[in-house]
Structure formats: structure tokens, C-alpha cells
Image 1 (cartoon, rainbow, N blue to C red):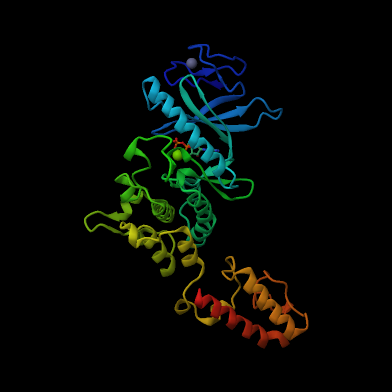
Image 2 (tube, helix red, strand yellow):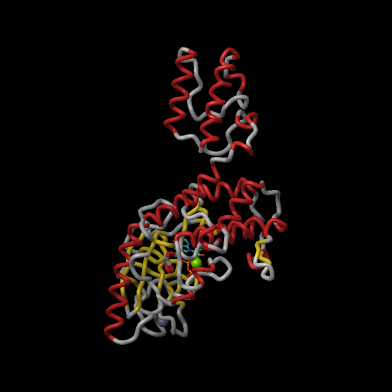
Length: 369
Ligand SMILES: Nc1ncnc2c1ncn2[C@@H]1O[C@H](COP(=O)(O)OP(=O)(O)O)[C@@H](O)[C@H]1O
Ligand SMILES: [Mg+2]
Ligand SMILES: [Zn+2]
């Protein structure tokens, strides 16, 4: 099937092999190569279509985003086109990140603006939640560790996503990585928005209060990501995890599996209503997530298998390993294998004391983090 891109078409479904809509005559190919197959989304700014790239022999899937015209009159249309072109340059750069869809093309056709982007095969997190149920602490920690660097990448380029929510995060089938989509509302802090419809940008349940008032900050994305975690932990609307009378989040009582005090404090700080009380950067959240404070970690836990990415920098890890080599004459585990006692048989008992010392040093680094 080919799908007519004219929003007013009375019968948009067309056979595969026609070039123009049988009902309204609109061109069915974008840039003579991208053919819409079916709508997969309809937001405030436009529509999203699953499409195919007919120019490539394998006819790979792609995604077409169509934006509703926001301007009338030749001058404003001209201006809108200019802004759109500027924003496309930015999206092109963001698309270099492996967890953001690549921008394949952008164009203006029949007075409408289009972006064509890489298709990400997988379910979005709203769909995953519906299929698999609520997330647990480990899954949320993985999600944050996976997504915060992507946001960091955007923020470093002065782009605020402004619509972070489960629907806009896809778990890619090929590598299980999370991919952020729907940059339609994204706004460069220095430039202008792709679509300037003011406060309607973003989804009410996930939007930070300051963004509601038209002042999105980098921390607004952190807020929305925190609310996303709340939704995934509770499997209920974030509105239902907020006590409006007391202006307080009450999400912990609705989680489906227990959440540690550490994580719950991190999420609470992500969803602070007052921006200054919130984490200001993605880095801060990542540090809080991975450098737990020494009071919360008795030394024994540190010698347990490391399940998360080591919070110690590779340089320090290397130094520790080198130190160990000096003591043991090279009889060492390679770095990155789980620390004993997860694999006690592979470590000679004579090394235990040295290992203990190293673990203590490691704990010191953790404590200072
Ligand atoms: N590049 C993409 N690859 C695969 N699926 C996508 C892609 N972009 C969006 N989607 C899916 O389509 C849905 C709607 O697209 P989106 O860009 O979020 O538009 P909107 O929210 O404005 O309708 C998303 O929730 C997601 O499931
Ligand atoms: Mg969306
Ligand atoms: Zn048509």
C-alpha cells in the first residue's frame, strides 16, 4: 500500500504501484524516492509514517515525519522554510549518535515540511510496558545509564528534546539499546523551534513545570526522564502518582517491585518541581547513580560481583591492576572480569590479601566520588 500524504485526502490508501494518489492526485513519493506506507503517529505538530526507500535495491524501511504548516503568507512561509532548514542541520548532527535515528533527508513539498529518518526496529517503552509489565530497579538503572549519555550528547549541542516519554523511546531489536525518537519538538536553546506552537510542546504528564510556562531548560529533559521512570516503575499514569493537594510525588507507594532508597532519592531529585533543586546536568545524575556514597555501601558489598558498569575510571582500574601485578609478578585476573568471590576458583588464595587491599583502595575511590 502507498499512503497519500495529503492530510485532507478522503481516501489516502493507494496501490503500491501508482505514482500519484488515485483520489486527490498528490505525489506519493517524497523526493522521488520515499514512499509512505501507513501512519504510525499523529502529534500536535504533524504526522509520522512508516515508509520505504524505493531508491535502494533492498527497499529498506524508513520513517517520514510531516509537519503541519504553521505560517501563512509568502514572507512567513519563507521564514518557516528557512527555520526548518536550520533545524534540519541540527537534527542531522544529532543523528550521528547511534541512539538517535539518522536523518536521511529533509524537504519541502506541496507546501509542507518533511523529515525522513532511519527506521528503528523495536517497540517503544509504552508498548514494552504494556507487554511485559512494570520495570524493576535493575531495569530502571540500565535505562538511565543507557539514556543519560544520549541526552548529554543533545545538551552538549544546545538541544533540549522537550518530549521525553516512554512513547518516544524505542528499544532497538538488534542490540537492545534504547533510541530516542521524536525530535519534532526539540528546540535549540540558541536557535528557534521547528514548530513554535508555544506551550503545546511536550506531553502534559511528562512536562516539567517551567517548560509548561514556556521556559524549557536542559533540566526539563531530566524531569521528563524521571517521570518516565515513575511511569515504568508503577505502570500507571504519572498524574496518578502525584498528590496535587500537597504538590508532592507519591509514586513509591505504587511501585510493582521494591526500589532502593538510593534510586528513589535519585528519581525524586530528577522530578523536583523547582528547577534549582533538580539535577542540573545529566552528568550529575549519572554520578549519583553510579558513585554511591560510602555510608550506604558496607565494605563487604564492594567485594561482591560487580553487576553494573564499574564506576571507577579505566585509568584508576589500570593503576590498581598494575599495582597488583607488581605484587603478584603478573599472576592477575584481566581487568573487567567479575571480582572475586564471584569466581573464587580462578584466583589463587595467596592473592587474597592483596585483593583485599586493592578492594579497599577501590572503595576509597568510590567513597571520594
Ligand atoms: N525512527 C523511527 N523508527 C521507528 N519507529 C518510530 C520512529 N520514530 C517514531 N517511531 C514510532 O512512531 C511513534 C510516533 O512517532 P513520533 O515521532 O513520536 O511522532 P508523534 O509523537 O508526533 O506522533 C513513536 O511513538 C514510535 O513508536
Ligand atoms: Mg512521539
Ligand atoms: Zn490523496
